[in-house]
View 1: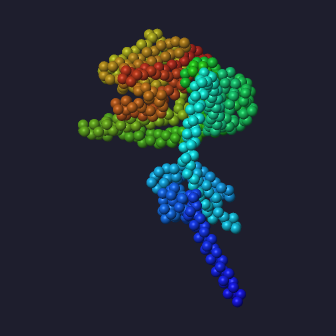
View 2: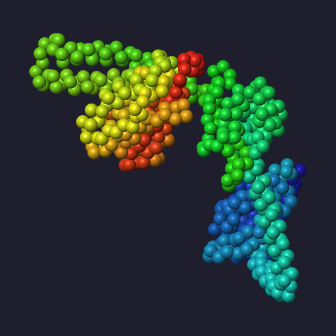
View 3: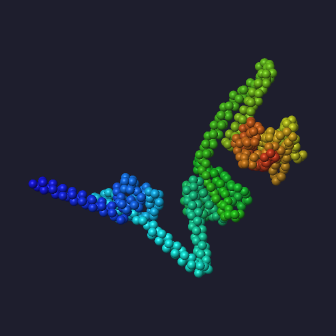
Length: 544
């Protein structure tokens, strides 16, 4: 009996629930407010008649679709959905409804999360409110306000213009201040995080900025040296080697110079840094000096390994190449029997190629010795005439044979004494004359000019040849560099001659420079200090 009663009660409850569901469905359908039910995945489960009317879609067209397709603002809708799922209060947002007929209507959407007894999210109710009229009213109201404002502005134009001008000035000032502050912060961030060490001195040579990389290179804190004058920094033992080097920079010694100043120093055992000083200019006025410290330890290590490889390879090649040279000399001299004309021509061509290889190996060995700092073997205290005259004599006939005029401007009296490695200075003269001769066309002119002034001998070798392209002149004294226009003319050459010349002249405490214009010619200058007495010569040797 009790089971039958329970069964009847359950059936009655079911009927009540069904009636309630029908009531809710009917109420939802005829509710004048557009309304739809959405599940936790933002899929539409049902929509009332008002919702269908405002959207233009029937219920079956929207059920099973996500709510995104109904609205224009997809990104804003994403944040709206997340907010609904995470909050228990009603969420409202203004968006644009895209009707089925593609017409766009401004609407206000509201949503309230549905949860079960365990507070789990079951979805939400989404309602729409057409706010077209209110928007139009708002626009009309804004237009009325604008009209009234314009009328008011018209009556008080002079006052308004003055106020606007003052406000513009204040806004521009504030904007400029903000931009300046942003730029300052950006510059500070760049300096702080720069991979090279940076020191910034003001126009009074007071150190204002030192970045963390510079601190780590010299193992010090910025508080130890920041705010101090350049001269007083010499007292700090940690940074003394750096200050000693940059003291020779034109930015600190008061001498005028164009471009940047570069030096290399070893600060720790095996650690080398490259120092660059650059003036900080505002227009033509110098406002400070920037010192950049670049760690080149790895580059130095690679360069040393490369030089060592070149040196070993050149030494290993020299023996077989020399053996080939002597063998071909014996063949050409007939020591191993007579050669017919064809054989002799072939051996001569092979001999010439072998000579080019010998020259290249000698150049490589010279570069290796330069980099090892052991290039000047036999400095002698002699008149420069004894070095110059044999070279001029040996080249005069060859230059003339090529159809090129050769002029010399050499003082008739014996030239002053110099401290030189005769073989190396001869090599410089040969390299410069070779280049002038090779790259000057028939009918051109090569001029060698020697002057003595200010305790120096200056040698200038001028030609009317092809010149050097302006965009390539900076690399002229680099290893293995050959200008593009001469490569087209003369395919042979190692690109080491001028590099070797520069280092020979520097080793003799001289200077080398050039001027050149493409298709007009070039002039190369080098200077050597004159050494008058035996004591000066001995002092010179101590500096090598």
